[in-house]
Length: 190
Image 1 (cartoon, rainbow, N blue to C red):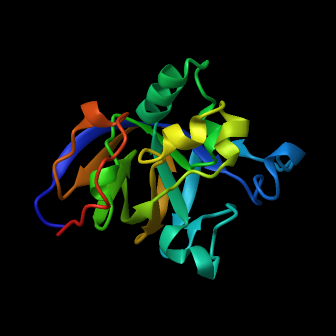
Image 2 (tube, helix red, strand yellow):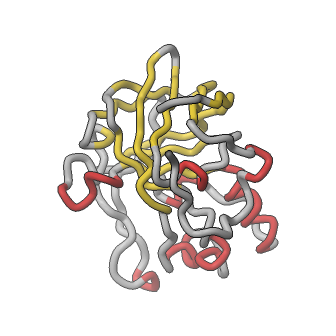
């Protein structure tokens, strides 16, 4: 990473689940799987979050960790006239406040938490699945397009903690746009 832009963010939630909850048909209901909102998670370079369903899975090595902004969920709930969404129902691993995520796609960024840095490569958008209509609200699947977050690969190991954090980005971000749907295809970072 070269020139760095610094953004104060809050890590609101750290989801860890050992197995998938959304498979099959939504009308049959989600699987009853243990999910925890951890205070702290351990990340391993190239593998993901220790204890999570995507940890060390070859098919998910470049996208083992998902991030979403709470502003996106708040904007979607407001647009749909729904009660605030439980961010854990999106099944994204890291829920942040104060971060526009779409411009990170295609490049590297750092999350700094309690003095530790974890470097990530933001590989692609975390596209929503049809389950969102069932789990969040009717119309949530469509509303979440372009603001479902990003799928990342941890490039370094370390720990992340809920609470105040810093996001370091090689490109400028617009935190005030965190709730808006990305209109462009994935932007490419240097």
